[in-house]
Length: 117
Image 1 (cartoon, rainbow, N blue to C red):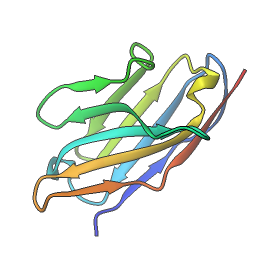
Image 2 (cartoon, rainbow, N blue to C red; image 1 turned 120 degrees about the vertical axis):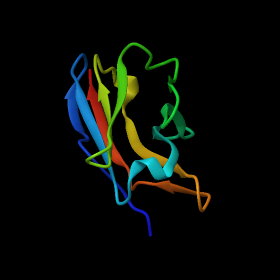
Image 3 (cartoon, rainbow, N blue to C red; image 1 turned 30 degrees about the vertical axis):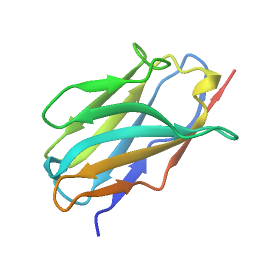
């Protein structure tokens, strides 16, 4: 069973930074893409960013210019560097991966990010 394990969430003041990590149990080259989603209380889960293993990286409009997604193939890990955080960024952040073969989608358990004003 493929596992995604997130870490790095926490409490930060507005304007601060946090880096989230998502460690996969298999090589990330098995995935067509990986991404980060978030869900705030009372809201639907939304896409934050998506990284295509052999393509580009897309960002949601609300995080463009502030968040950066990167990968470390050797560590089987992707990261979400979050800068200039705003209270509106408060949410549970989930790592997501879409596998080539077999075709499956995986989710991490989520990590809480809270930004105080």
